[in-house]
Length: 440
Ligand code: FES
Ligand SMILES: [Fe+2]
Image 1 (cartoon, protein in one colour):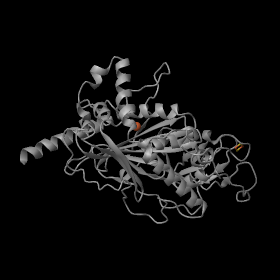
Image 2: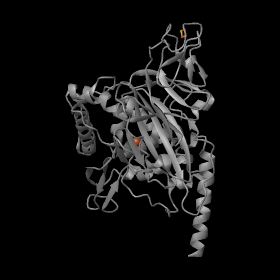
Image 3: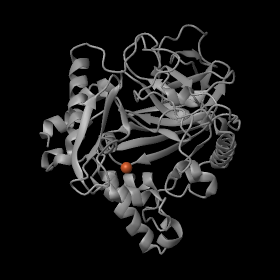
Image 4: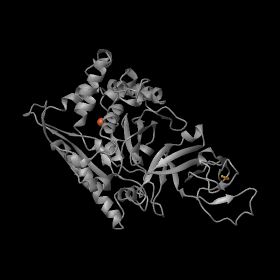
């Protein structure tokens, strides 16, 4: 458990708060570039600040304060211009630095010095990132899934009505899978009468996850260069099928989780971006890579989607992994009161996650650079998981590489606009595997 004061310190993200200042040292992903194809102007709320993202008519991006300086019109209704965004009311024009560079019908250009708020933005791997901290901005890290070549991608966004840390703590919790993605999954499918049809196959992930509850000897958690790794140690003596150390997804500080290696037929970043203290933008950045010798289908841009979390009657949808996670995060309350918790042995990685966060907040307060803040670019591709991507010969029987055979039924991927390309990629991978096996 934490004191109420420590809980505040780790969760609040507004300007001037300890965690808010830490967050303002990072490039924060918050939109897909393809969202601007549909409408070049987009309302955004990040770290409790209301902003407007736009693409000007030359293709440049800007992120400026929500209100026009003149008479405070909401700039989400603005008109993109060659070098900025014009207010729809009297046409004042703001560039990407927030400078008001034209006031039609007013005094001559160049006389007006007032500026609106503005933050630098960059695009990488189809994601748009903002930097809201002190300048100069650090380098935007090229984490592997954003830049891995020869891959299909799609991006899922969901607004989750609770504090960001609840979502991120889920990553420090390897054993929740047993219940949230095992027993709860089964119960939800049974209640809908879909269990036989959807999960009868022993390959369905819920069966394996349910088994992870048996024979747990202990949990482990170790800091790494970019975050921490953790997992479960199973013991045959305690009833597990074998003695095994099972690594769980990797935490990349401060708000990323990586599941699967770069280069795998399916891997993803789950990114928990604080919209404000009680809302989180959950991003699943999904990357499906082709192994050597296979060509991934081509995409024009990275498409985005919003997987459904509730049905037409407002009831939670519980038949895929992210929706199950979202249910339990929100069910902890808007900002869970950690002063009332009773932690157990399985919470060991969560204790490390909180300690790491507290240490990095302290460091920023003392004027230091926190983990994963890069003054210089750390390279063309960095592996935040610390795991060497080598998955060029994946195992044939893997649930997520069998999407083309109807196995995309345990996660939100199936709602994504690129799922048919992913199935085609997996079909090509299987074909290559069969050809390789025949030649061996
Ligand atoms: S209110 Fe924006 S230009 Fe007048
Ligand atoms: Fe989960």
